[in-house]
Length: 137
Image (cartoon, rainbow, N blue to C red; front, side):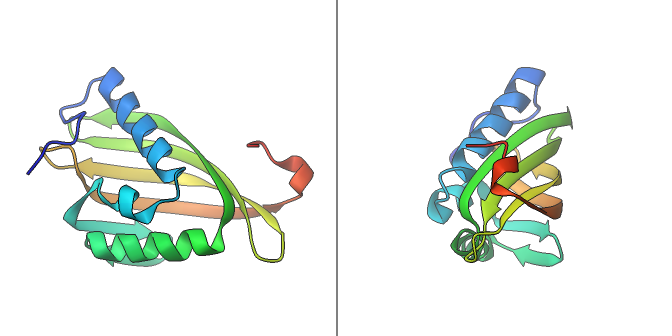
């Protein structure tokens, strides 16, 4: 399998790069591109949904971005060790009715030896906001 740099074990610099790469990919809102960062048999928990495999991830992302309009994400490295990372994130989006939300939470990531994410566990909260209260433009 082709390596997806940076690969573990991570340094502060390579962990920060991995987080930036993930943020940039997710902000494309391209499920085909984003799902390629995960192993074929990746395991996810996203809120109350459990996903198994890259194809489940791709379908999940299609549903997500069909619902979450004008999505804009910011990720921040919280900590790391060897092949694992803790990431804090925040994003804004609006629904079909025009209601804006700030969604925020934490993710736990685990990578394989080739730099693909094999586990992702996300806890996320949504808070309705006024459009005037948006942080990301």
